[in-house]
Image (cartoon, rainbow, N blue to C red; front, side, top):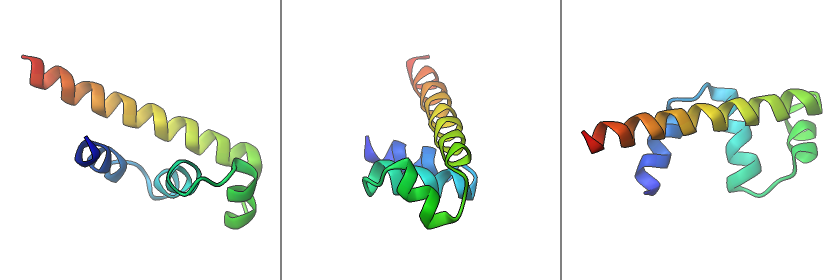
Length: 68
């Protein structure tokens, strides 16, 4: 649900959350986010990837906890 996603987002670092919000919620390209945040493109891609992986892990842990 959207509440679970909001909780997962809140557990990320500030930069990971900002990159994910700009890319996946606001619909900006990685290149635009890099320019907006004055970061190298590779750094933005890394923050996005690691943030999404952390969110997935948090959501999976939550779901495993609910199934028990």
